[in-house]
Image 1 (cartoon, rainbow, N blue to C red):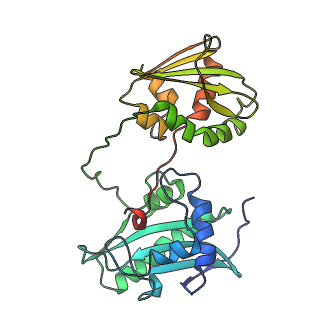
Image 2 (tube, helix red, strand yellow; image 1 turned 60 degrees about the horizontal axis):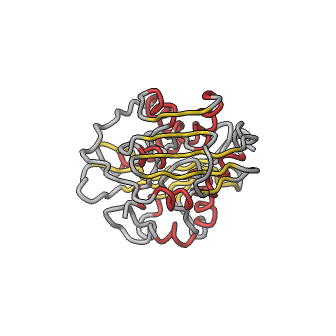
Length: 278
């Protein structure tokens, strides 16, 4: 349940805050693809020493600023005011808020706080290394006049070498998505083909398992091998690929099949906090 709106203040990091901040990080990042879950010890450890991935809270308590409502921590931001190779800038590298009616207001306050502190330290600009798919951050930054930087040059290269093994690893997540979807009552088999690989999914009572080949499947799905990693990693959706003719589908009820597939393989927002790059 979302917390209600109320007055909050911002303070710097105190020892033992990591007990709450680690939980807040896990709670906030649960809807994103990318971050590893953290423990209080691992969260605190990644900010122990100044490095190219982030600041040291041991040397600079202000690098972690915390929004507090009463005695409750409702958000925080990690800002590196001395990033390696960026002498005139500061970098907000992590920002998480609790679900509340004024979550966006808290995001705005934390960013404004980092801007003020960067200015006091002689910085001429501030950069946000946050997810471009974070709705709260995106809306706040647009209002505050931030401009997106051109994407860094790079290439996404991945291939699926064992489709059946990969889907076995995903059985628990796929089953959870099934149970939480409007297609939870669907029962049957799905034949998934991509290039020279194929795999059969058995959809049962709230669970999905990788099964052996058998009679004709209730649904047959073919995926262009070039986009298979993007689909399985949540970087695109079945609906998008189907519209582009990169996914083929055979089913008695095509609309119901697409609803099920979009529930099982949705597009997932991506986030990888800078401190977790290596």
